[in-house]
Image 1: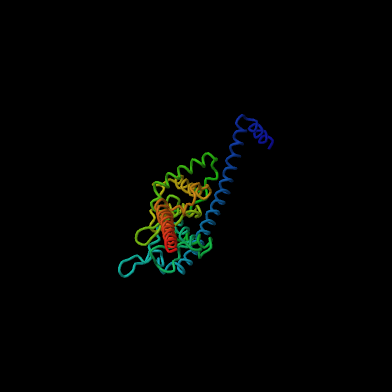
Image 2: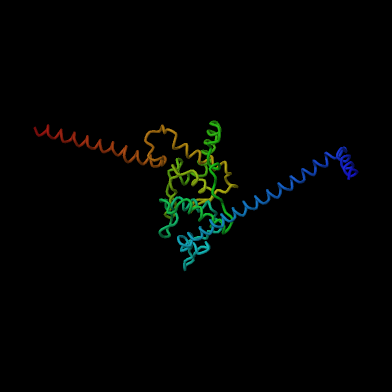
Length: 291
């Protein structure tokens, strides 16, 4: 017994004893951490999957009640007897399209028409999120953007001004033909119109750029980068805060409306006043001649 204890004592005093003990300790600690970490990750992943499944299930229930009459029970779309699209397929539109259309009240529509109009939302945000989760489960599509995607609040003042200038250039090049140079909207062919986008929530503008609702073209990240979309929104926000120095802006509808106003109201008023002066002068001369 004493001999065994002596040999063990000599091994403990060996040069490699400390390193071996340290290595064994590290292996044991790493193994224990791996087991605990894997278990926690698996638990979190299972919890997240379960939560998402519940959201999708809730969204499908809402969809069947409120949307399936136009878009089909599985979002496949419905065609009329003459081949027109009664309700388009929703596969691939993504949660961003749902958040825009339902969040702005454009959907559900009372009846199919040329263009859905913005109105108070019929669903709460939680219900909209559930609908978006269900539609996103049908096929991959654009996700709902985060605030950091469309806000310039984290930039310096100089960077914010640069973003506004870039956004103005992009907007004037791509958007003024429909939305007017001040975002006041305008008429479109076939009974449609480009809505006013001044004062619209930034998230919805980003989603509209991303998904291209109705007659609007979509601007994917290949056409406009996320930063360029953010800059356009910054420019529109600046229009609401900057002081207008041009006098009566008439809603910002541009030179055609302003020219028409000048001709009809301005010159028309002067012509009417001139006619009144001439008629009044004629009556005065007749009275003097009679006397």
